[in-house]
Image 1 (tube, rainbow, N blue to C red):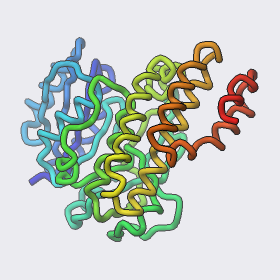
Image 2 (image 1 turned 90 degrees about the vertical axis):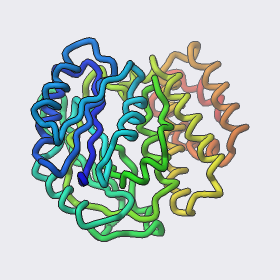
Image 3 (image 1 turned 180 degrees about the horizontal axis):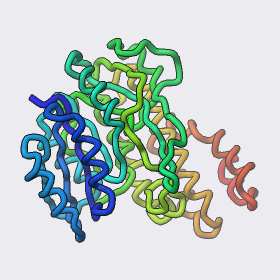
Image 4 (image 1 turned 90 degrees about the horizontal axis):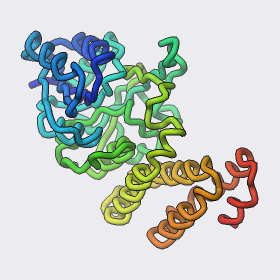
Length: 321
């Protein structure tokens, strides 16, 4: 059995997908590379097929109709055969040396979730900007921790490697035809984990700064309805499973959802008051009615944001006083 399945979502990725795939091939026969072609219009399918033909025991090319990033995750979950599962976007890559260190660790563990730091790479220079560590306190590395220590970690999609059985229990439930589904991917599997481990070396190399990225504010404003859709889905997930979650899991889920809620407000606050006022009122009223615990969380940070960033402070501040 393969030790690690990589899902590589691709849409019109001909310009950069080869760098991504080549970095993964360093894992050799221990890895499975699932290239999910999401109905691309360029040479993505051709490139995927060429790698599958050249490395038939490592690479599998899967072609599907366009359904968005979430649909590629759902598809890859169905096909994954490795002991563990990880997502790598096609414009990113891995540190190949550290990939082999990760694979060696996965061979000797059965923990449900593994977290590595990841490097943020500056888009224009392709140099490391900073290393992001998925914990905010000292933790012992390579040791399996129980859920009572889960509050020591921060959930970033680029840091996460899940045991395949955990992901497949989650099922194909990631939103399709929608951006920002990494928030769902960080939260939904937590319902099924009982342990985790932290490693001290970065594997994922995250290219940051492209104008096409979903977290670019201009794009977030354009796609604010999709961010809203995912945020509401996270709130509904918490409402449905609140009593099923371990207390430490619940704490980290609440923190992650509050961050999504905060970002939804921030999107509105980057818009003109005339354009945003009705949308922000509707969201505010929905959240207050749906879950007061989550509603009360981000308000202090929102007021701080308004004071620092908005010229028209009065218009927005009145909403939250």
